[in-house]
Image (tube, rainbow, N blue to C red):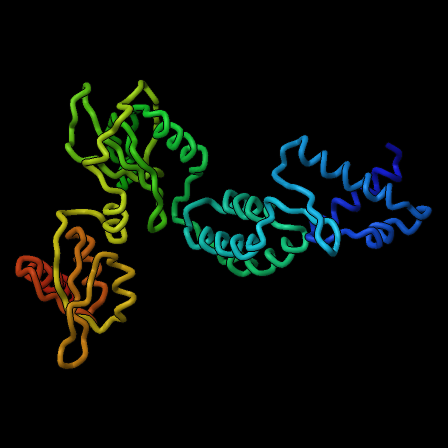
Length: 325
């Protein structure tokens, strides 16, 4: 293939990547310096591009529309809006260091045509510039992939779990990971702990992936782990708040918008309204998360039941107030 043919094919392919349709007239305009080309040469160029894409299993294909040939496949018609949504969610997660976040944004952008990439870059520029990672961000991509592989292959591992207190003792655990999920800035791993092949806890335990260190995959685990003892759906609902303490159901009146409360407590329900229009809410959460949220709402909520939780909240508020006497 001569240089002119190579340049022509490359020019055609770039046009296709940009989402343009290539007709015979358009194809001729791409190479004004060349002598006029025939319909037969045009069809041959399209065949070369189509066969090359197929031979390298790119996922793309050349299709013919009334307006000309176009590139279809991985460029989903809704891909631009998908890419925008994913980018903004990624930047809101705060889960990755700046450099790694930039790499992930570039990966998303690579799914778009060159023209779309320019609009995409402008659309997320301010969000990207204002990105604020966690105070101690950790590179998690390779660990996330390795953990997922271990789950898929039913492997058991040992690991040290770093405490939140600086220089604190990092205890060692052994167990089989069951699931990975992301909530509230962190990746979490659900692990069925074992000790000398004896179950330490009847229910699986939640660990933060960024605090797991010195991971060593030691042996094959249970090919049929006990998912009957664990519900990812329930765990996701609990982790919207700090998942510490016993699970309990409580009721409160609230001036907060009902939608905000239902987003925070996925299993909550509105049971009625007070005479002054406050919402009456019944919600379920783990105790510590519920207390922290109730405290954060100040006078906008009033805890009604259970009595033990009301007394605990009163004591905390009184203790807080005493600090300012």
